[in-house]
Every structure is written in C-alpha cells, then in structure tokens.
Image (cartoon, rainbow, N blue to C red; front, side, top):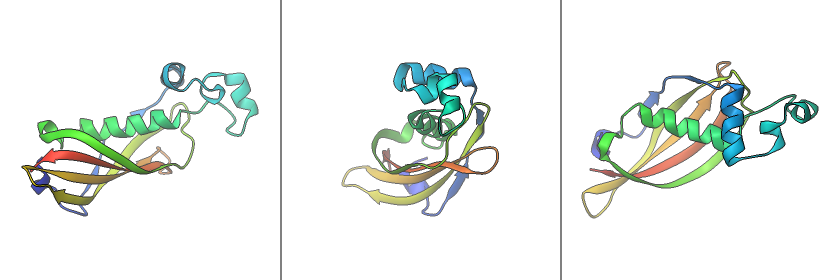
Length: 141
C-alpha cells in the first residue's frame, strides 16, 4: 500500500508466532548472549523463574510479523526511526505472539514519498501486552 492508502487510526492484526526455547537461545547466542536467555539453571534462580526471550528478539519478531502481512509491499523504501520502545513483560518459551498495528501518523514529503508511522503492540497468547513501540518508514505516495 502507498502512503495515501493508509488512514490514521487504521488497525491491523498479524498472524501469530510461537517461540520455542531453541528459538530464544539461538537468537540470544548470536545477538544478546546474556544468562537470562541462555543459562537455564541460572535463569531459574533469577527474577523470571526461567529462560526469557531477549527484548531485541521480541522487537524483531514484532517487525517480522507486521512486514509479513504485506501491506508495505514494494512501496516501502526504508525504515527511518523507532520511538517509544517498551519491553513490558517477559516472553517465555512457548509463548505465542501476535501484533496489533495502528497507523498513528502520516506525512507527505516534497517528492513522491512520505513518512508513515505505526504503533506496534505485541501480545502473548494470554492477551498480555509484552512489547510496544512506534515504527516510521519512508514509503511511496
């Protein structure tokens, strides 16, 4: 969809994705190698009573699920910023995540492009919000 096809207040829901312990540990091993993501015994003794997903992993999944819905298609040019990032609750192995996306701003630029900003709210299968953040992209008009 082009910028002009989105409307402020428009809401989308993505499909779901279930995280496994192996997914969490693989991501963390490469991008966030902290004990709460990798060391089951130490993680059990900590605040979260077990392994949790990296917040960066949760953010990446949120972005992935939104992009896979296909609304940007080939009209998106590039991401421009992320704001108001909040990791609200831990994500555990076997949690199933889905995202509610709301268009919160759109601005035309001088050329044939514009900036579209959406708010991503990620929920687990217990309908608990685990993540939220705003994402802006440069997109064709």
